[in-house]
Image (tube, rainbow, N blue to C red; front, side, top):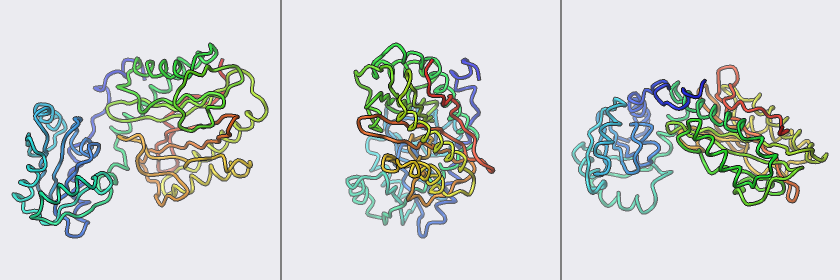
Length: 375
């Protein structure tokens, strides 16, 4: 993929956004008594309609969809829903809750589902008061379940984001030999991703050098990278709403035996986790493939987090790859595999790939080399 193709969304295959409401209606029909769903989580609204603004609600029934927003998005909502081929009544109003109440009454909805994971207690109370004519019920991950399996257009966007991140790290990794501060290196990496076509970064880039590497979510500081450091770099690019996520741990100069051992253990554990990924595999099995090797090396207590998570319109989404996960991987799922070891005072190592689950295994979407030495 050349640089020009990375900078133009038009080069990416179209997503069949219009078909998603139909899939949602099938899922809704399987929920007892539910005859309407109020989608309020903006990421889910984007998934279902293509709308990218910051204020909206979407009411969906078996036969109708009502999209509600405010005057800021009058033209944008019509353009984005129209471009996506989404059939919905668009209402631009001052009070979204009043408009939803009117639509619920007009459509004769008796049992309205709310998104339990994202509706706050205050929102639930306001909606229940304005929707007294129907029963408000809790639903869980109805849209999120649809989002688990990525279509070809979604995969292409995540693949593009991963390719940008790969190229950006390759372009700047040599700078670690020049003793930049963590913050300087993070800023240069972020700017390089944008220069290569990213719309934004996926999340605040983590650059954790030397002893700071023992903190999995360290924020880049004014500490200078020096000879003998391990540097944990966790970062991603955003393309048309879709994220990438990758971690590499780089070695600046020669390392002592203990740090070399940490690298070897985590590299082997991460490779085992990637090898375990496949259709029909329980997420807990992938977690165990990584965790067992780290445990066997006597570092189990230093693996401080789960092995991975889904990636898509959110940087962290289902399925979770953890000890307690009950999810099973399916073709089209995109997850990370990111074991790590963190030793206070010494530093840390984390290696992470974003992978696409296939029928007979997985495809790595993050392809940056894992050779830790900076040259």
